[in-house]
Length: 335
Image (cartoon, rainbow, N blue to C red; front, side, top):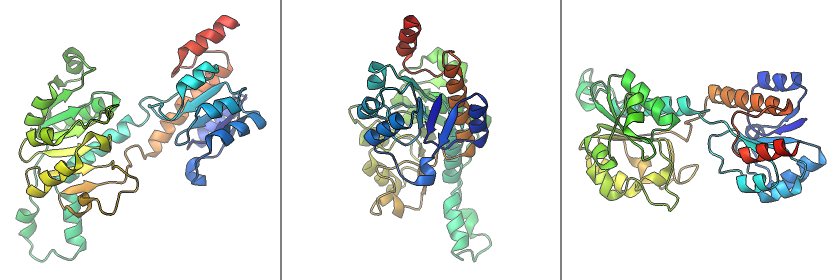
């Protein structure tokens, strides 16, 4: 079995694949700085005899699978599979595997970091000191006064792997955690120490609102201008999920007016951020360049998960993180 791995991958996992008799060619997109053309990638998979391909940033479309009729496994180092045409893979008998939860802790910790940076005005304070503005020994005690998280209400929107981890960390800070997720029951939320609420009540009640939900398929903003207007005066908003969740104009106005105390944002409508984006001019916003999952630990987790499933498949065992089990059952039935 041969595998082309276009994602960041640990040397340990590559050695493990080799020891299991899987010939892995590793060409991380981060090192090349380029993404593969889907159809050309398919032709390469066929011409070089690859049975499996693993991606993180690259796309695997219908033309990829058409050009690589001998491909058996397609892996994506993400929880989401929207970069793979799963239907096309399934129709052509290609097993799809993914890595759910690989960056849950990384994103959750960044969300907490943004909460702390926003509530204690860390970025402002850093600029204040670096800019040689600190002349009065006592002025920062009033001019950069912040708020503490302990005892405050954290409103977690989206209670998947990331939202649950954020909830756990907020609990550790002594916060009272309420959450909203239409796919989670109140009893399930209670199991991880979260009080389930309706979205509007969460917005009206929470001192910190942190977003961990996918965007709506129809493009509707979860936090419209009307819903941002419902947020508690002096609240903090953190978004590490999707720019499409928020009416950015309404957010900017709430921050400018001081109605919202601060915000922490890791995700933008474009990457890199548009130089004209008004968030760049606000002092009460902490901005990070979409680095939620950018940790060595995330790479280790997805490397381990993909490696385990490739080895399982090579031995005739069912992969753990199987996206299209009907292909596996079809193959088992044919054998």
